Image (tube, rainbow, N blue to C red):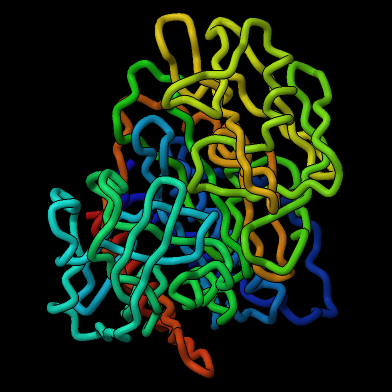
Length: 467
């Protein structure tokens, strides 16, 4: 199905919502018996996950319009950012646009940090081959002349803090604080990524700037103050390429086509910094692992694997015959026979969430030995880091107010996204912003594109698809 036909379908949905707006006033006289046969018509079967999500959004908006006096939400919106799976589940990145005129960049999504930064033109040889941001061509760039430095487990980056117009998933934020990086550890980034988008809370930001997501959530720009992530799995696909479709970042809503059942929310364990929730139980091969009490786990899309205290890691691998501590560059990890299928479950005080055996293996060393995804971590609070090895198994929601992390079971539609060979990889693109927020200001200002602009665009798609 072409995008033109898809948009034509959305137009029909929007027209339905307009003609069936508010419930009509009561009519005293009833209509005599007339029978109208009904026929269920669903969306075309060849729509992808993103298109189905857009249809679901239109249907939801129609219901809201019907039961709110015919008025659509006039001050809020939602958006999607398609992700890319880089290097066989090693990292997931999306795209955003910076400056005036806007230039698109790919950035890693990291719920374990809070800074937005991109490599600048002064980055030097360490940034060879990486698309860089040029502040000299942007009329909205402002240098605050404040230094920037941040350290991660993989390396560090430094530069200066600035403000700019940032666009992502249909939202535009004016005067958003971010960092322009002039130097970083060798190998920290690889093409096509240009930086990192921190999705944790403001207290963690080295820039001392409110994160982009938090600016949008706190301003009321979103339908709901939350974002959600679905990640794909390619690590067990022998035909996978270095870049594959990585899932989606939903902003301001949850995509019902990507999960089944209800979302189980777990309240944050402390004042929000990391996305940190209580971890109550872990099992390996059906055996309960002693993890202690008052255990906190950070939910981190920027970490590929899972970190835990060394005594817990030892207890985990004791359940796997012929496993042993790895050495050399793999110190802190364990190796085990690749022929062993390992099942792990987690609980956060409610439901039990299973991790697929494919996600227990991080990589192979030799023909028969695998490196496990669990590694020893010396961090005390939180003592656990749950990265992508776990998050590929659930639909994860990060809620701003009240602060919580939610998990839901993946739908068949989401699971089918794993390991699709030959699927198109999303590219960094620049769309039209439908909502704008002013950041770094005493009061937040929202600006929205008039609804008739969106309708006129949809009608143009309809016209094109029919001629």
